[in-house]
Figure 1 (tube, helix red, strand yellow):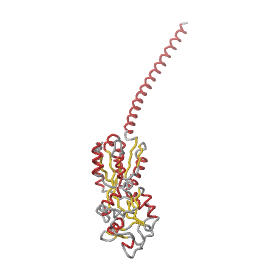
Figure 2: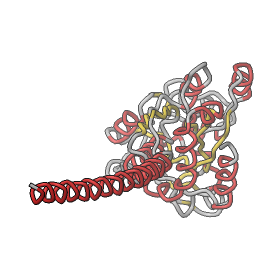
Figure 3: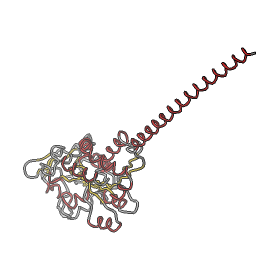
Figure 4: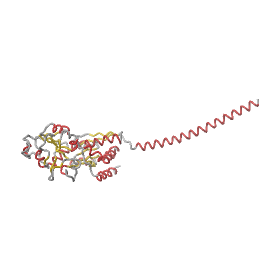
Length: 336
């Protein structure tokens, strides 16, 4: 009886040791879980900090058809390599039509423009309390294009080009410019008044003189390409990029500014280069109010200015000087 009692005591003692050991293990595991939980919390915090750079939402851009290929390319690259959660929507209503969508309450985030903002447009922005920021993104060369079979008007002076498009230019046929050229009626075409390219041509090249009454003005640049490509007597004008993308169906007129004919190219298009008289800067305008409220808008603006020179050439634009780009980047950084 005493022996059984002794065995019972030993059994109870053994169970107590086992329970104590389990309790100790449980505490260690609990401590480990707490530590793991703390590590998990740190991991979650780190992840959250990392996710702060991962943005979501929309960026809405409209405006210039000339700038469209460049901005569209940048948007594609941004959504693919930088911010997959951001949708950048790029449209091309034209510079002036784009400003109408930009300068309204809850308007577009950016307006691409192939000219600078007008005084009346800036006045409207001020009236609405919209702070705008001009971002110079590239240089474009206004390019005069003709049919590939046109082998007579391949070189012209600015004055000869203007005479075709001016109401009082006195030119109706090619032979009116040069008697050795065909006695065929010239068919001028160009972008319509919605486009900054039209305004640049009218205001800068033609010095605000009336265009010839029978000029065929179109909204879509693709239509202009077709009109010239289908007609040996057609002549048109638009940005260099639309020419480079359609060289199989168009040829560019080389322009003699006084020192020999100059071919528009990425080497000659510059504000102080051989093609300077037909060179213009192109822009995108940022709604600063929305950039301060929507981080994806400011992030995209910074991406554009940090990368625009990389993609300018492939979309038919000459790059802006690096120091100008860097200045704009610093100004955008200051908005954070």
